[in-house]
Amino acid sequence: MSSITRRTPSARAALAVVTAACAVTLAGCSGGSTSSVAGGYAATSSASAGDVAQDAASAAVDPAKRGTTVAPVAVAVEDQKLARNATLSLKVRSINEAVDKVRAINATAGGYILTENVGSYRDGGAEGVTPDTYAAISISVPTDKLDATLDELQKIGQVLDRRSETENVTAEFVDTRARVESMKRSVARIQDLMDSTKDMEQLVRLERELSSRQTELEAVEARLQQLDRETSRSPVTINLTTQEELVEGLSSPKEGFLGGLAAGWTAFVGSLVGLMTVIGALLPFALFAGLVAWPLWLLIRRFLRERRTPTANPAPEPSA
Image 1 (tube, rainbow, N blue to C red):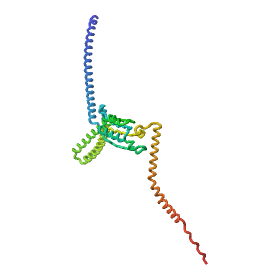
Image 2 (image 1 turned 135 degrees about the vertical axis):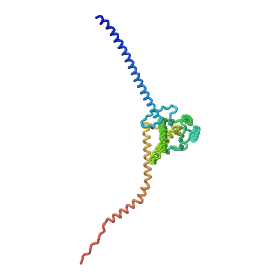
Image 3 (image 1 turned 60 degrees about the vertical axis):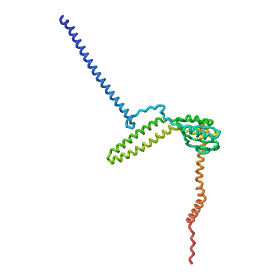
Image 4 (image 1 turned 90 degrees about the horizontal axis):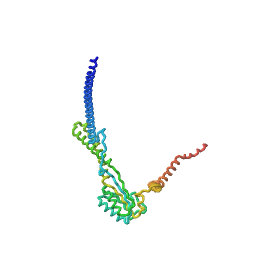
């Protein structure tokens, strides 16, 4: 009995040692497995990130690729493309002197004259408008000199109205420029294919596709040039008058009831003028119909009526 009691602690100690050894072994295997899985996951994630970065770079180089999305490019404030225009109405003492000053300021700013109306509105004449009372000049100046030019122009006389408008076309400009570059690369690829092919049928198809893409490229390039002109130069319309009422409504349209009444009256007068114009154009034809066509029609009616009337036959004489 005593021997069994002495053996029990030894057996328990041996069992404890074996258990500890197994635990250490399992821990090592688990750590190695975890490390391997983590390492594999990290490698896979790194490879995926590399593929995504490569795809993004490829898409940025060639936005025309199908199925790719290019992130919008941030544009610095100084690189913004702004299309600006302005209108200035001035009351002056002398129309001729004011026109000469406008021309001088325009030349100093490096601009050029677009239109010049002295003594008449652009849309037609009006009561009281003469070469001594009204003139309108439209100029084009560099956009970066627009504000300075307006400051110089308003010194010519009393400012009745000054307005400027700005449209940000940066997004359209950047997009159009990217399209131009992409289409140029596409045209170059087709030209390379044409140089390397010897199949006449394929060559004809390539020439047809090249012509189509070149036409599209020219249209996009024209739009890009137009945007560049709109953002590099700004038009300015200067209304000069010796009578303030002659420029009312040209620069500051009235709103509300009076504005609606004025707009309605203008539309009514315009419609009446159009109607009288049509009547004046038709009047010669009406006179022709009255002097020539109407008597002719009466003669034709009389002739037809006489033909339809039966001729009376004489009664036969009685036989003897």
